[in-house]
Image (cartoon, rainbow, N blue to C red; front, side):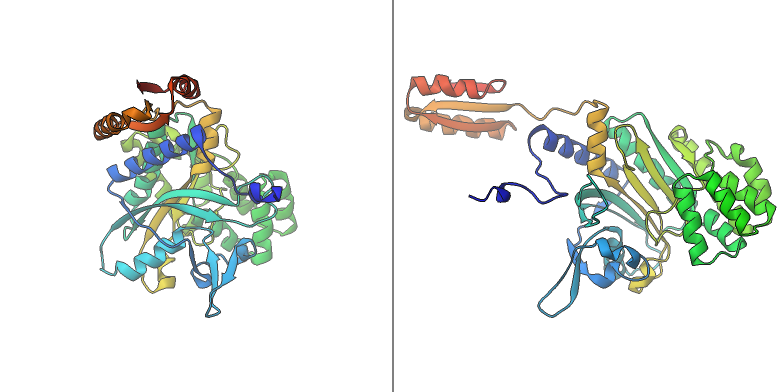
Length: 392
């Protein structure tokens, strides 16, 4: 037999036992939290037409997508992201004007980027989308929902970094940067290279006040009161000033939710997707090398599918949360103990009736028949730790 067929391809894996139980616990806690906030489940296909993902919104990432063709020659894609699928479905089915929709989902996404050494190419996302509400209350609700979901699982040490797309975009516009400049600046910010950023700005003859703003944008703030200097220097740039004002209002509402201690503001945080237009956030915790959640406002995405509607959402990375939960030794709710009924073949009728009664009472029951008493004793050893009933 070819040993290769026993192994999974690079970037995918099998789950079983305690690891799978941990995943199910995390998913269950998150679903319960989403339901408590009034979110209703929706399911979209695992693969869609290329154009659902391949417009200008994110075509730059298309090289890492799994693409194939149907019998009619259409290009299909294993979804790299679920949000565009939700936007397409919402535009198709929910056409009522001024109707707010709260939707939640769970599904696997696929990324064939060969540079992702050690990273999964198939991973599970679980998220929520709030469609039809452009308010600052909607922004705050989504961030609060993330915090409540983490708390429901048992996490206490985590942080949500928040920014607004117009902060960095406003600076780029004020500097009259072209696409190449923007790409270079974003790369320096992403790598937290403040010295490299200063050097680059010097070479571009950027005004002094804009250099100071760029420097302030690379810092992290715990409270709106901490960015007084940033607010003062941005007063001449309405786009930046309005974004800071929005973030201040979000913080005020998060304080009412009593989740503000989990939130910090990182103006230089870059969007993970091209379609984000407003508030952007990402969550981090110990034991996970990547963000466990990413989200933001995408008010223009539904218009790509023929409907104008404000929207904001997020996606938890369940796999990253599993790593973090294991690293932090977060106790998971134990699944019900399995009840094993070992029975001699002469006791089949009694064993089946007993199993039925126990299952009706909500217990997990497995049956095991044995030929003789010696077999019964051997089987008991195999199920050490389980509750065992013997029928001879």
